[in-house]
Length: 442
Image 1: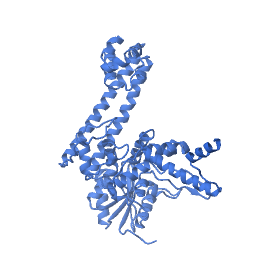
Image 2: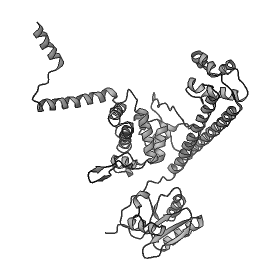
Image 3: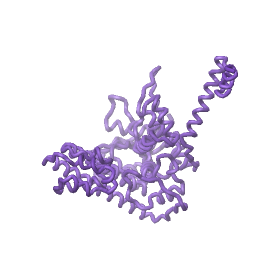
């Protein structure tokens, strides 16, 4: 095979050592301390290496990637699934040699690595998501502690961690047990609509162990809520450091409401519109400024690095995989990058929508192949629309469920017409059939 890249090197990264292979030289090893990473960079430059390939192993690659890039080397970060060795021949030394060989012959695809503003925003956003998951876990702990004392607030309130719920929990932890006094702390709309039920729900059987569990869960919930707030401040500071002229919304334009985990970042939509040159992803079904920000931190602002929407959806892990042997076709997942997961979550929220065409498409597919396939197909369509909007600038218009149903009706009509031709039959509209029946009756 002809070599595509010249002067290459392959690196296998571990927790304690890295192994570097340069063609014509023995494999060199370096420890994973920062000073040793710098020595590895000098070693590669002195050997005349210009391009380096290494696996994306955990988070071990991050600092080494930055040091080698800073030294002027063209670093290819590749997916570990592309560099699998033959079973029974796997060692760290052979791995780096195999990576170098694949890279030299152009058989590897480089991963997307965020840089600059995107790298910083991605770090804060991913940390924020981790805190949200931890906070959700402690909300469940709060609900469990309440149920164990037979305080049935989870059945009465839509959110135990809402404004009224947290005020009552704080009062309970401070020693208040009177249901009427606890009810008086709620919002007046709750008192009017659910007053009697809340009083009954608050007649619990308090225990020392239950109150201790509730206190622990509530304090942990508040801690992670504060951590999320700190992440929002860092995101705001990162945007402010760029000194961007904010995009101004047209008069009368309203942004979609962010219902859950809304970031406390002022003018988030204006920053996003400025980054994308006025292209607004919230025109797409299910997209809010927050979901758009999540996708931005994972894919970056330049989607033209993916040649087509098919390349983009394949990278997201949303395209159908091929795993065929003989006559057997097996299902094999292609991995789920974080960006692909975001599109899946958006699609899941649209599955039960009664006014959006994509929701009708998902329900139709769900009836035949199940929700897992339907959500993936919906996510793929959303990702294609997002790529077209950001790369080609195509205007997206949501025609709604009636437009989709009209398309389906036309497709069924074509099918009926084809079957009628095959069976040598005629199609008679219902109105004409009724007139014929009336004539026969007369």
